[in-house]
Amino acid sequence: MTDFHLFEAGGVNYLFFPSSARLYQLSKAALGTLCRLSGAPHPADISAALRALPHDAPADQAVLSAEPGDLSAELDDLLQKELTVAQPASAAMQNAPGRNGFHSFSLYLAQSCNMSCCYCWNRGGSFGKPSGLMGEQTAQLVTELILSLAEGSSADKIFINFYGGEPLLNFPVLKQITLRLRQQEARLAKNFCFTVDTNGSLLEGETAQFLARHFVQIGVSLDGRQEIHDVQRPGFNGEVTWERIVANVRAFPNRKLLCLRATLTTLSDPYLETFRQLTTLGVRRIQLEYCHETGYQENPVYQELIVPPERQFEELREFLDYYVDTVSLYQNSSDIPFVSSLMDNITRIRRGNRYTRPCGAGMNMLAISSRGEVFPCIAFVEREEFAMGRADTGSPLSLHQTLADFEVDGQVPCHACWLRYDCAGGCYATHYDMTGHARQPHPQYCKNMKAKAEIYLYAMAQMLKKCPWHLERDSDSPGAPYSA
Amino acid sequence: MSRVPFHDLHREKAMTPHIRLISEGGNSLARSPGPICIDSIQVTQTCTTESQHMVYRSATGACTMFSSPDNSLFSVPSEHALELDRGLLPAVLRTRFEQQRIPLSDTACVRVEHPGRIWYLTDRDRNYSIRKLAANLTVYTG
Image (cartoon, rainbow over all chains, first blue to last red; front, side, top):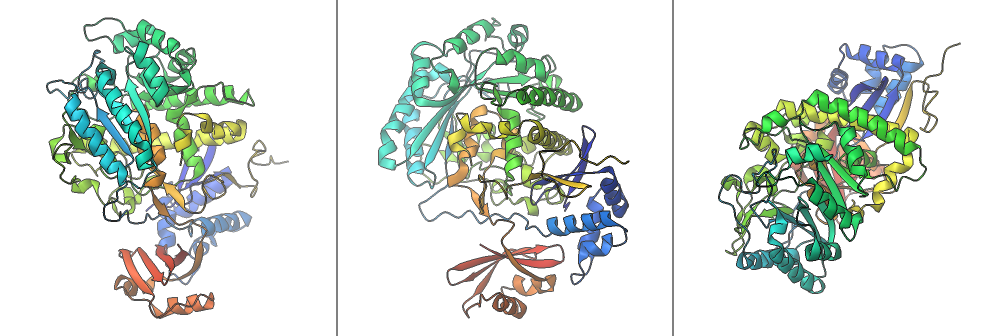
């Protein structure tokens, strides 16, 4: 395994330790000494040498003692301290009989859409199959399944995410499920937290009022300025949509609940420009994501839309420099939109949480199709080999073996990666798309993750230096009550 | 006169002229007490929806836990890993516990979590984990 990682960003040398999540800055002399000791530019060789030493000798000291002077002693002290930090290890996730860990359910209310976005990864929710909405009867079965699982759940908060396609095409069923679950909160002693991902075209009237009253977050997709958005996100018949969506956003009863999400493609403005466009709409949270590096081979034009990784990284760095400088002008950054796609990553690194498993797909989260079929997560829907059961059968759900018992330290090649306790193995569904194996990451995926992690670490260092208050900022976001 | 490295990093905690701690990980933050919650937020870097992104942060009720890195008791040479793999408690461990004034009872038992790497030791109502770190086996509380 790699016990530390050296990298340079913004002309500064950084040293990161995966087990402790501590980040150090090194002088050029210290960097040179560390590299010389390794005999190679990669510090992994040092840790390998250290581990190979007899246990009764102070391992790192034995290597570093060859280097004269105070610097060697300093590095010796540092390595001795950091290399004896315990490796994160997760406890076995065993639930008592009749109990479970489910806390999140994504419901495909509509496997159809009233828009035809060029990059849509699931073809308007249909996955290329006949489209449809969840019927009232299926919704009733799904609701009962959720209630039954929630009753046995160890979680106090149960998240219900309405997804699609365009879930608001099926507003009557959304309302039916929401109200039924709300009725049961007291009996179960649980809180249901409702969220929806919508294209915003139907976010008006009674629908908007209902969501503003019952939901904790409404994610609205909007791809920046009008010319870009209307090309990337046309209506089903090719009509423009930006104007209507923006009007709905502006008229929404409680804009604090809104999170604007832009997807960046080769057609888009750069990251920074897209951010600037979205800030004019007065929302508190903005999420910008590049088209995934995943295969999603179902969409033949998808590959053409993926922004080359090097351009992504360049745009991210440009944005972060701008963002940090902007935030640092204020002592209170509450009026500056929270860029959740970046800040969540940076805050997590700052907190030092370590992870040994990627996500709770199938173990503490489920996705349910409009036909009532149960899958581990939204990205596995309609992949029959990963189907876990049906809402109407009452039979136990069965999880595909590859999604169970994952531990990053036992997984090749993850076990040898410096990012293993942050990435924790990555996304099962993405791996499945890219390599055909849910546990096997594609080398390009890993390369991108590591490059982004270095950018996040750099951004964290910059924020700590220039605007540390912004790292506490997520406490006022709609998601804050659920922060770990 | 040589320039002092890191002259511009006035906010960060000073360490040495050549090595400076920028971020302390989770150990010094009030939001990351002892046992740190391992939720699933990291996967949302590639996750599809904003709501998912947020939802993962709620995993406190279903999260897995690991011990704080700072709760180690002592270390012994890694040659005893084979005994632990067989579910046996090495005599040296018992001795070291006694030296720590935490004598183990006769009912103390070892459970193998990951052979050669992680073991759990239970004695009455106390739990310990033992982990292979570099050339040592380190014992942690909890």
